[in-house]
Length: 98
Image: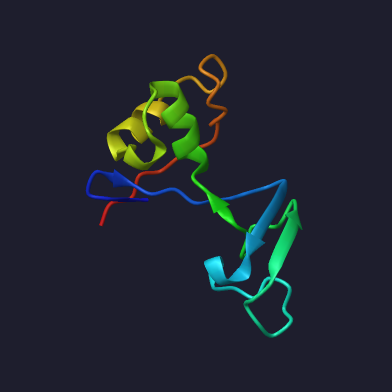
């Protein structure tokens, strides 16, 4: 998602993650409060802690801070060859503007 040229990315943080419920304003363990520290092991996408997955990959490729990736850099990355350039983006990606 982008607002203007600013790119925002959300992907579930998979693998072992230790998070505080209050940081995500979520009751991950469904015990009625948001005060626990929870360990996820390959959490599913719903309410999972997040990370900028494309943003991280793009930042490494162009040697730029992940928080400063813009939409033109994302589009350039998407247009690279999925295997030769190690993006592994091989399905359709759509840009929708409104």
